[in-house]
Image (cartoon, rainbow, N blue to C red; front, side, top):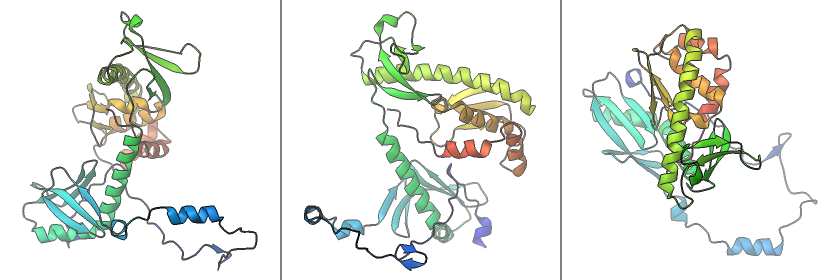
Length: 314
């Protein structure tokens, strides 16, 4: 009965296929393998290194994972994890789950008792914990790719690396993109002194990227709108944490400015996706048929977008 009440909100990554249990031993033609005479035993030095390596305390290895939302108000034990989640009562007909970079949010109608919320959490425990783990790994990858904003910093524009060069001599003309002196790659010359602070460099690069984003988005919206038989009225740049874009029935299109890091075909997919919502305001089969009418390879581009990890912008 409770399942019929649930409307589960999936995050950007969607459902992953169930994993298969690992076999007890590696097998060849159905039989477990065993060491052969050609396999040399480990060297004494390798054994010594292994014995000298510090072992992880058993308590740490067995400690349950913990995920905490900054606005958490309730906690649940889901499998081998403690999850502190944000819980809100809202005007809706079913229980909703959202896994975002900040953690798990649960929204429930006012008339559903807490015991039913707890039951719903347990029923979706595997999915929730898996998505929280994926989100944590994604954030760790973002952190590892953090850009150090200085002379020589590198970021991507339309899928290609761009090197930042601080050059106060170009102050009159503003930021300028060129091929670079040695032809090794494109260079973004920012009118800043070599000793400029990281925040100043970051803000100048962001301002240039946002100008390019607006120009490119308008160009691509004007390209796809006639093909889809729709008219857009306004484009806004966003910095949303979980959405690349959105569309309103009044013709307003919102697109994440950092899409300009990606290849043009991926940008085109997002633009076509949002414009298609001006014809079909849901994700029904008819909506995807509309997207496919102008982007035949949308499924591949959609998967590439989901697999994208943006470096943390700080």
